[in-house]
Image 1 (cartoon, rainbow, N blue to C red):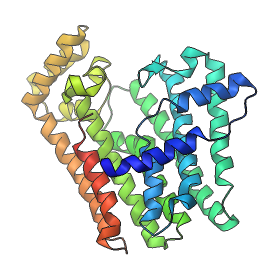
Image 2 (image 1 turned 180 degrees about the vertical axis):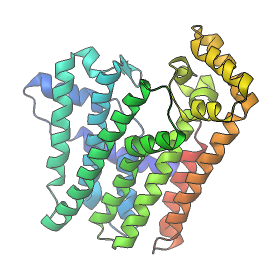
Image 3 (image 1 turned 45 degrees about the horizontal axis):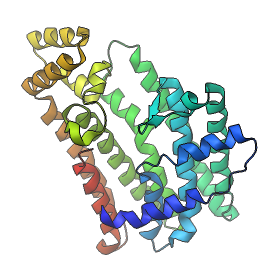
Image 4 (image 1 turned 90 degrees about the horizontal axis):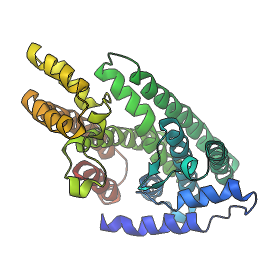
Length: 322
């Protein structure tokens, strides 16, 4: 989205100018390195937008936005360790470039820095921000644990999967928006509505991720198409496939999971899922959460003009192909 570029530039500038100490070098240099890897910066942008909806200048919401981005990157650093991931955005992860202990400690200090940044607000605003921030931080950890638990379970219900992605991914989007609304001193109803908008868009966002993993254009995707299938991950597509399959298709799914040939496995998954109707079924679920998000946005007590940037962002998330 062209109109988001100015917000992205603003966030990048604030992060680049953040005053991390120079010593100990092995504590702070990994953070500078990791934060330069970039990314969509979607969460801090949501905080800025969450304030602007209620006429709050981005200079007032920038510290809350930076805190959200620091927390998000802290979680990524630790996720990379747990996943033993060698790359993040095509570049070496901290534990790979340095070592695991440095990555753990650098992630820890980035979380503390997030709290430190939030302390710039007055006592009443800080209290409200901290209550929401702490609640969200715990939920993200709960979501990560559920995701790891699912790896060792034979059966996962779709409702359980949706709850996992709500906790692991979408609550932080809701939190980011509500933090902007808190700084803007929005009323309680509007704060709840903008949180619900972010949470439901977050669920739709993750479902879109699941769909793109198997159906994205390889030239645009930037990573291997079908990575979730190759790893036998219990994504919404896989869970829906088992739910919708007939007896023969269930046998085909079992054979698919046992297939060790990555290229063949992805091709057969696409054919089988198309036969079952998985793609369309997941699109319907995604659309349902998108509409829930728009319904919450519609109820905000501000003009349609003020809501327009969030509506555009929601549409962008739904239509993205990477």
